[in-house]
Length: 186
Image (cartoon, rainbow, N blue to C red; front, side, top):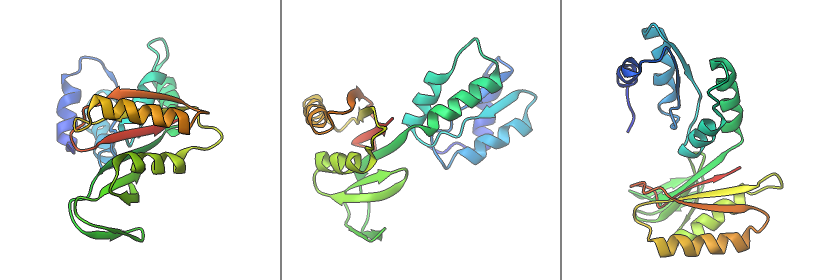
């Protein structure tokens, strides 16, 4: 889940191109990714994506016709416009950000900080999005995890469409194993 600099270097060596952009999609991987450029005779750039939604936004900003550094700049701008959140469960009892968390509680993370705790997955999603939506928000994207049924995901999407009518709501099967939902707001 957290590749080392050596792991990333080996992947870069397998790519035939000389210009390479790495999207870490995790704050814990950014530093390892940045070290790769010093270890290889290729032009390796890192777009500091810290979540899957930021990585997707960055990829959508990429254009084959643009030079490398212009693409990196556009991808950085795109990733900065994305707010990310995730819904998962607590693996142990703890107290974080003034929240009492018990093992197996449903927790909502916003940009890696636990900000919501409860027992209902759908309510946690709504609480997270209520914190994230502002007057500039246009699109809510939801990636449903492997533990979420199609019916539950569709039902939640319909509720969110009504609740946040000023935004377009998009639902995708993410099938991620550890998160019930990954969310983004742009």
